[in-house]
Structure formats: C-alpha cells, structure tokens
Amino acid sequence: QVQLVESGGGLVQAGGSLRVSCVASGRALSNYAMGWFRQAPGKEREFVAAITWNGGRTYYADSRFTISRDNAKNTVYLQVNSLKPEDAAVYYCAAGGSTNWGRILKTRYEYAYWGQGTQVTVSS
Image 1: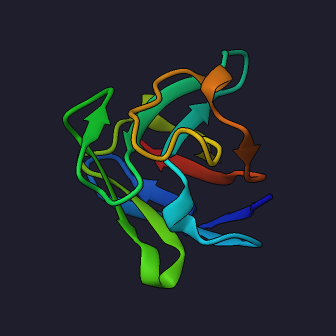
Image 2 (image 1 turned 180 degrees about the horizontal axis):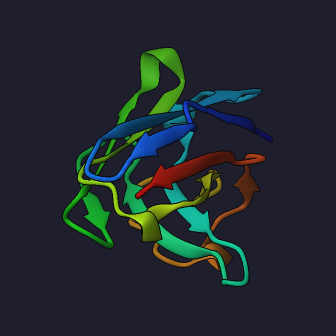
C-alpha cells in the first residue's frame, strides 16, 4: 500500500515551464514503476510519462515532458516545458503496483495507486 500526494501545480504563462512533484508514503517508492497522467475538463485521463523503478527507462507522450525520480526522497517529478494552453489539466501521479516495478506502464489500467492530483493552469 502506498499513498501519493502531488504538489507544485499552479498558474503558468504559456511558453513557461513547471515541475510538479509526487511524494509517496507507506511504502518505499523504489518498489514501484511510476507514471504521470492528466485530465482536462470533459476529457478522459490521458497518459503523460512513465518511469521504471530505478529510472532506467522512461517513456513520454510528448518530448516536452521529462519524468525523474529520487527514491531516497520517495519522490517522482514531472517537468513540463514550453507549456501550451492545452496542457492545462489536473496532473495525477500513479504507482504501478509492487509486481510491475521494472516495466513501463502506459495505460491507467496498469496502475494500482493514484494521488489526488495537482491543478496546472496555463495562461495564454
């Protein structure tokens, strides 16, 4: 069991950058493959980025995204560069479960644990 708490969202001007964070508690973050998703109003939750348990592999839906992790701090990060208005959404951190620590997980159905999300708003 792991609890995830996102932070770092806010209002950012289009073209700017933002880094959101996800802190895990309950279990060590190193036990999990991790991912970021986002959900805009009226849309389905969509995949953003994923990372394996030790950061050995990453995968991105867009080249503007960078996912990283610091297992010593039980924290995973998402860096979003060149923000566009279409990037505005609630960004969710997800943990893939203790059996999927070495895999890249690209769908929401592969993740067992979710945070409450952090709102990212982009001004045009």
